[in-house]
Amino acid sequence: MLPHLARFVKGFFEIMKKVLKNILKVLSFIGVFILMVVFTLYASLLLICYGPSKSARNIFTTTFLETGAFKFVVHLVLPNKTINEIVNSNSLKELNKDVDSNLIDVSNENKKDIKIEEVNGSNFHGTMMIISDPSRVKVATTAPFSEYGKTLDEIVKENNAIGGVNGGIYVSTLNKGGYPMGVVVSKGEIVWNSPNGVGYHLIGFDENNILKILPLQGLDKNGVEKLVKEEKIRDAVTFQEEASDANNHFVKLIINGEKRESNGLGSGANPRTAIGQKADGTVLLLVTDGRGASGHLGATASDLIEVMEKYGAVNAANLDGGSSSTMYYEDKYLMTSVTLYYSNSSWRLPEAFIIEK
Image 1 (cartoon, rainbow, N blue to C red):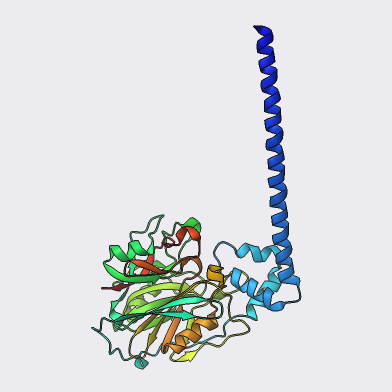
Image 2: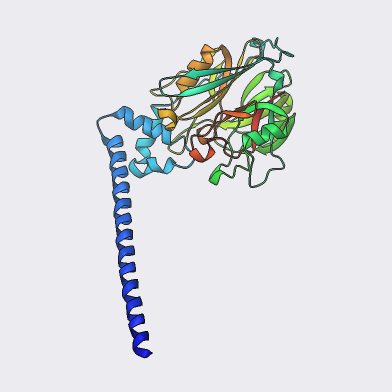
């Protein structure tokens, strides 16, 4: 009995040694493969940033600084001083004008038509939603806000709306999407009031259904309450204007018919969401793809300005973009995140612009 047991134990250990040896070989191969991939990627980044093409370096820097999760990649290969120089030489010029409400004569109220048109650029594909009646465009929220937000289709359906797009800046970490940033106004009520962010702007509609783009810089909560009351804001979200080694965000695109000029590239190329308004009050909602979707890099600020100008926008602003960019209409997604997992959905959001039926 004992000799048989001894042989069994010895055989078992011999098998385990072979198994472990093979496992170590596989792990070693995987480790080497990962190191090769990392080395190749890092070498590629160095080539982009220190190679002969400054244009490639600039588009890489400005594009990645606009992302939520991959800003750090830029800092792996470039010093802060160089990053700031690139951003400053490839950003939008100041457009220090306020929206002139007298340039908008809302004449399309009670018109129910909505048009959907395809928009194409050299590095992006987009969809434009054209809403004749601006009073139908509202901000819907998931308030009372909690850790997890809701997908755009959920927000649209819960509010008995016909469609919508993503809205303002929010906490998007791990796609939880439960909390907005800045200020959110819905149905004339401030549902989120945290204005202390760099370059925050309030983007939305007043009681006369005119699109307003208002800076929040320097305002505390009381100041926001006063601004919303004086401007008679009914529905609005927040986005950010900041050009630095930390962010490359922009808000104003066209103000009172004057389009914003740019230095160099003006911005990076990414998926985008933008809102505009024509002289007759018609609302323009634009969403574009990017980050490799269908081979497209994405839209730049100049692209958005060009499209909005073509469609007759008197005023236009950039909203939150990247993986958040999404459009839903008549029970289907027309544009959505490039992340494969969300190809028929959206990232979770705390609020969105919706279009009432």
